[in-house]
Image 1: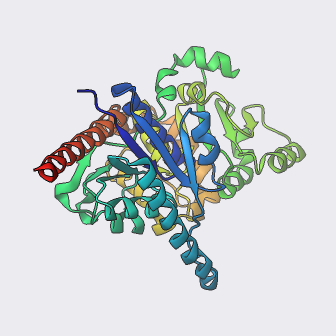
Image 2: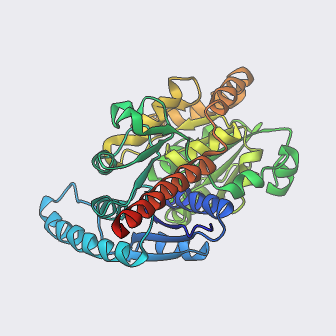
Length: 384
């Protein structure tokens, strides 16, 4: 008998939530091409564009996050949460899913809460090494929790946990290339070491200021080439400031690296924030990395992500507050040390889980199967 799978995937807000959500959806479609997948996101957030671009339908909730600095603004947030819960309930009634999947982000809270209250099985995909408040609450009613790090029993019931890793952009893995070829396409000298510095698509002020503070040190190491992604927000300012003091020949300044697969293939060392999705990509590619966790995230989870790697000698940690003095110095020291680079590459690659999306998709479909069987039994008993 052909099964008509209907699955809700909820969450978003940042690329770190959207890419895993799309990876899971794509894996479900590979296994069950006829499956109907509906995304539920937050209105006016980036998923409202990215998800349709990937070929999926999405409905937005009028949800917003809590303002930790101004408590009085949260009265409106509480009202929006209640409004979002009512809309989520209506969506679930109309779409009638067999499973609701939450990947984190504003919309996942109301959607999974209402799904569980309506006896729809829920699956949480927790990307970080330190679980957020929303997922800890949702875990009480969840049927399955897919995690990327060991030791998550600290936050969730151990019998619900499955270690799957984080889904990553399949395109990035498919586009991996030979380092020499990547260097040629990037206009780099393949005989020189290369450091790739990324602070996210919008950029990171502290990472950018760290590079500005050490421009002369970069100039004094011409045997190393640096690719610096400033982010779109800071590009014009950084380009102008570098031009005023004279851009070193071994420094490439760009607002956004369009071919990240080539940049990662060419790089001997990556400097990055410690988002869960980025870390999973570095692990899968076996890239030596210096992590500079963002201090502007809930529960300081990026620092905890970074330390989970540092504890296994799989990454180097530089505190955001010390980046100006330490980051470039540490990057140059590390990229010159071949033994250290190799140790970092080997240890981070051990943490890579290339089949994460497929494993999560299997769990989603098993929950859907169990739900459909339960519904058939209920229908038979009703007819007796």
